[in-house]
Length: 105
Image (cartoon, rainbow, N blue to C red):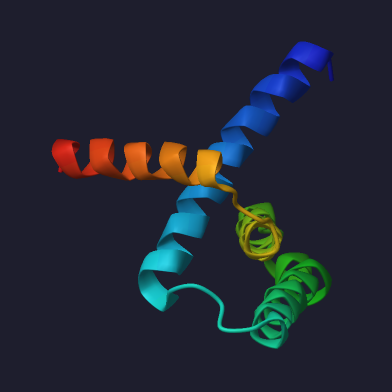
């Protein structure tokens, strides 16, 4: 795989991870604690493991493994975001983005 192909595929997968993050946030809201985040990350990991070792072996379904891997990535990013401090400058940018989204809706 070339670097250009890798960059392209990473960009495409990142879009899917972002969509999954939004689904998780809309459906369940923010994590209430690190323990909750860890539990959900572990659950998604276990589903990925099961897909790799059992389900995909039977059906040969790599799409299921890919879907589970994207869910693991989404939960891991949500955890990283939870642990990322925000400062006043960043808050202004976030507020501006939220206002722009409201105007589009």
